[in-house]
Image (cartoon, rainbow, N blue to C red; front, side, top):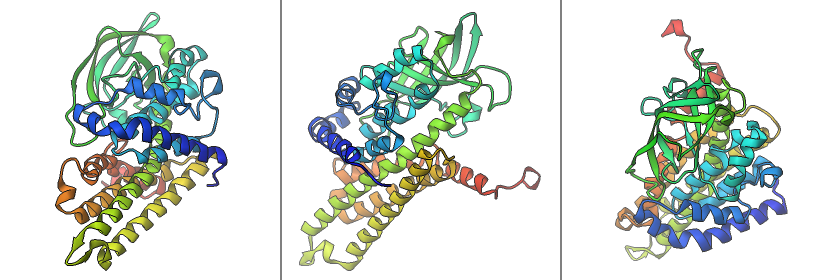
Length: 386
């Protein structure tokens, strides 16, 4: 990809905000188990960072998706995965379908304040019995007059404890699993919504992740995003952007840990010389850096094809798969070179190790990415051969 001065200016804006408003507070937010989403997102919104690829008429910058990729990549400068993940939900996971298919009225009511940072968004897809298998969700929305009446529950909802609205995927009909779903904007203060608990996770400690239940929750039918029955398709499109975001977000995060490890092993003396001087160490770090650059090429190629209007389901799935596995590889290898210091809970490499493990689970597990890739390759077994 060829980046313009505008891309580079966006990088610098993110770096300045991260240095001033995020990294000085990450340790405190990790201990608290939550960061102040409204306060921080408002600062991002004021800086024009939450709607770079969203329509101008609703407060966005009207730029292409490559600018969202710069947002994701830049967030790798944050000393932890929680804020990048939560911000990714706001920019490229909960809002793309609303921006693309929502009515003007709906976009004014929910997209515009999400771009300005006045609203926090969350995505309601996964359930206790339906994570990567989106087609099997059980949450329903039945139409009663001019309202949807929603019943069911959602799991693993990032930003859920602080969100103002949810982009909810629900069954709105009795037809085929891929044609009976709709995306619906659900205000999180609507009567009948209960947040049962904030989940106690291995990593991503500063990101609030919740389980939510819906008991006869009424929202207007006009809160439907696009056409009823098209929700599965819309959500698959959102997943493409989410997976590209995950790929781009891995790049600078891995580089940050590799560079921190270089600095640490250069200072750490072992048997009378810097640990970095051992060939096994500096060769391994060179290998990891090479893998990061290979992922960068894949992510940038996928982004270019996405901008050209091509279906990038295979490339996005490959990028997501590679990103999750590479983050695990980098964090594990680097922690080894930090030794006991790396095993301490508050060390940067230990946090990266905990946070990065989610990359192979959230947004579609590795096995689901492999299934998508295999299907698009045409080498999935036929039903009669199982």
